[in-house]
Image (cartoon, rainbow over all chains, first blue to last red):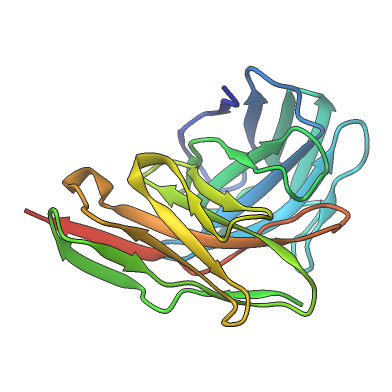
Length: 117
Length: 115
């Protein structure tokens, strides 16, 4: 149980294009979803937290207009990297949680490797 | 603010040997503690968590961890490792009663199991 599907798993695109990444909770309803960025050989950096039906809460230093997050339903959140540039290349991981309780573990997707040429 | 320190960035070990991955945290408030494992090019999988009660917590794949409040530690152990345990391991905390329950991660420990 508690499966999170992330799509696509790998994307390569040209500089200036926009890329959308989907995160779906397959067998549970996720009131809260998180988006992380992971640089090579480093830990996960929280980018934003989204609750279904409300605006995402971005961490300090993360550009809201650059990384658009939509959490339109209890099973789907999307991250759109707008006008992507090579410095946006990274491994992006989403996670989902059943409720807002901090004791609830986060369930992670398999990540999306984004390469901007 | 909370922080998590994983004292070893890399731990090489031979197959069937015991292993301990160290984790210390700093927080002025009470926290929940988690260990996650990440296999190459994948997301994170929960190994175990400490919420309350017994300080010795057993997780999946034969791992266990012990919460030590006085030393603010949550070390992960396995008595006999397998090649398949080769992965990156992350220790994380979240604040009890925190509004969003965000996870604060350590920098990870890469466990390499050699035959």
